[in-house]
Image (cartoon, rainbow, N blue to C red; front, side, top):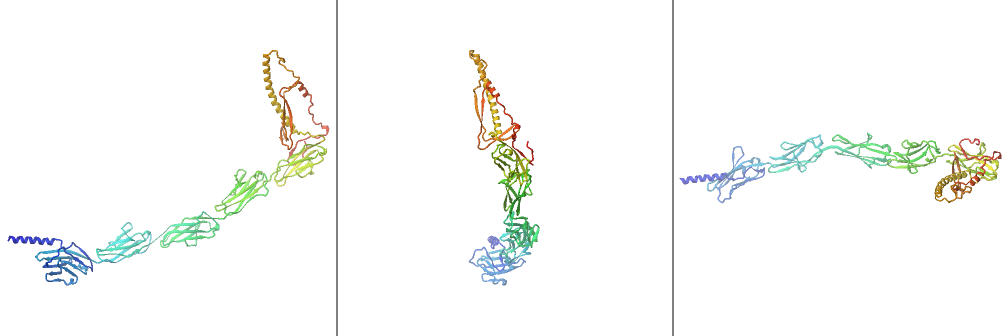
Length: 635
């Protein structure tokens, strides 16, 4: 009795242990519809057949349906499983083929072993329809940036499927503009941008399969942006006759349509390039282009590009206002040129001309004006006309006419009868003056050149000779009067000017000698007084015999060569060179005071006497210059 009870307890314990072990794999097992699944047990293969083995199925509605029952003598599947299952009798495993959706549920196994032990277990099966026919559709493939919303939908066959969206090969994540709906089957992008124009795809998967759709490309219209205008060649100034090509570009999808404008007026060209062939100055102005996108209905204008067409400078000329400029009169020099003139530069003799109060520039440096022309204004004048594409220079030589300036007459004022008289007249003048010689208060011309020559001169030829100088351009005339005396005595070879110079030189030398003599005299007296005090038997005392002229004299020569009197005005004497002669004056100077005898000899000399009026000899006058009429009386 006790033994039987213990056996029953052990049997129950053993049975519970087998039933609770992992005989079948944990579920659910997942298999594709149309496929197969194998329920493998964890039992070891046995040689001794099981007494009974049965598989049942519970589809979840509370009814357990037999699948197959097997004994040692037979295997009997249910009709709906006939041909779809295989039973592995040694392990109790079962293979189920041609799976359908309704095969999903709980499968149970019950085994009675040969030693009358019961083994049981269960697991679940889920059958899934494989993924197939994955497609993506979009509400609109032609979208406008910032205006449109893209909505993409993914569809697929299969059960228990999940969706993933791909942009090219990268998975798309939700964000500010990206949203998922319909359990991931719908992708919404709002608003679209140009960067959304790429391939979109959908990948669908379940536990048994997956599939990917074909890509859908969104076409996003945008722009135009960054409308840019360029020129070739790109220069601020263009020479007339050149070729210029303007190009317009913009970032736009689809490509923009371009229009062109000059100073705000449209040019009827719809291309991205505007060729300007043989461009003319009338085509100068501000150019710009406009890009337009028909899909976005937007337009964008470029910056304005100034193009200034210049004419080449040519035909530069420099002309004075008169062909004969006159000193003291106004003078204009005008610089003219054909073309686009930016500025003018004036030079004289290669040096820049600097305006001042007398010389001015006006009319944009076109005219150089002299308030009063002077002879120093003569010379070459150049005007350089400049613009940014070329430059040209014109030159003119200006000669200012002037004079005649005060007339000078050279020649003797005293001449011996029967000699040849030569008087020369000169005056500064441009053009050279014409000269006429007449006698004072006479109208008859003696000679019509600058040099008057008369042979075999007579006493009757004494008088006042007038030289008149005339400039026919300036219209000015001037004359000078020369006094001539004809004598029968030799003319003093030394002119009065030379004599005056000698006198002045003697006075200077005498003053210097007197000063030196006085100093010497004081020193000598001091020595003599000292000697008188020291020696009482010396002769002579303090006095000295003064009847004998001292011999301490110096002989001095003054070189008066090549000089004659030029002007004597208020006691002033000027000397001027005379060609081919050298004259000396001998001056003797006593270093000491003169003796009494010498003084008396000097006092006995006859003083120079003036020319007697009753001798019939004319007075000699120096040259004088006069302006105006020569009808003047002799002083």
